[in-house]
Image 1 (cartoon, one colour):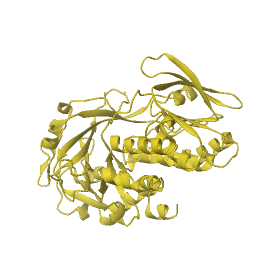
Image 2 (cartoon, rainbow, N blue to C red; image 1 turned 45 degrees about the horizontal axis):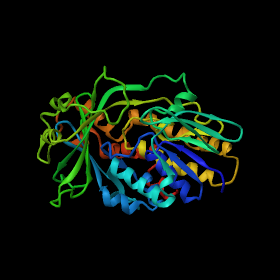
Image 3 (cartoon, helix red, strand yellow; image 1 turned 45 degrees about the vertical axis):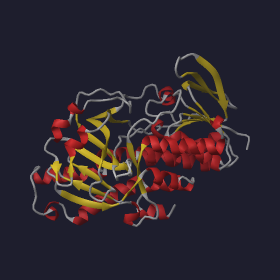
Image 4 (cartoon, one colour; image 1 turned 30 degrees about the horizontal axis):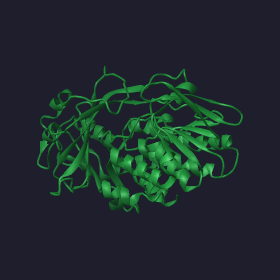
Length: 415
């Protein structure tokens, strides 16, 4: 095949899409704005449908050797009372695991795979996209140096796929009239801490609500010191109505901005405030998303991942949906057809589906069950959780989100 894909952006979406293209023998080049890759960020959780896609690319062993296999979610009130346990991954009967991993480790697995399979020239660094253009026969990206902003030679291909994230230059060019990001009014604080295993050593905890402070924490690296210590990823979400809207995953913060809200959260299974205080770095990110676009594709250029459907980092679905976008688009592109029409078919396949997930993350994300309990109890301790919210209702809450997000067991068996 002589046609070539230009991938704008070398993040998780861009690199997994590159591997999907390589698997099908489709030529590509990835252009990344950063002058070099650095292991930035904190942790993320790869849901079974995302892991299934990565496993099909031959990456499962590398992922699981670096990450932690998630066995269950446990949901707690702010008082430390257990509301619900939801088995996950293979512990829930899936034939594929759920994986918690440091974002930098996942990124490195993808980088190594692209270079190993497609060669070192497959990724071009220090190329920041400035704008896109096209003719009847080709798509064009205008670049500047990622360090100096000096103009670089244009790059041309048969199609351009913009994987350039929530601050996508292509999205802004296509939709200059788009409203500013929708801010939910809560800030997301993240950190990692070296800590001994808690509960099963493979449990993800959800605790509390955003009104008084919601916490998510889970291990993302095993035995980092030879003595069984794990690297624990933790996330705080708390109301901050007047916060900034800078969407930068690497913006640092101060633990004193939120630690007082969790001062009493010292339970027999985990001393949460002490765990937070021992974090080396803390980052902040506003809980923003954007409304579904009326279209992603213009001629030979389309959007993928966060550039197409930025969603709140809730429910572990941002990276997963970018990975699935790439798999769908690459499978369509393998046919030697009119690629402009293929891009439209890709958009028609994915746009409504991910739009539903964007909206689901606002109201029926897995942890929203804790708000139901808070409302029914008035924030007070309960004697029997089944008198507050029956088991069947709790199970249905989780099942509904899995189905909307595309990883219900029957959905994965049929793909």
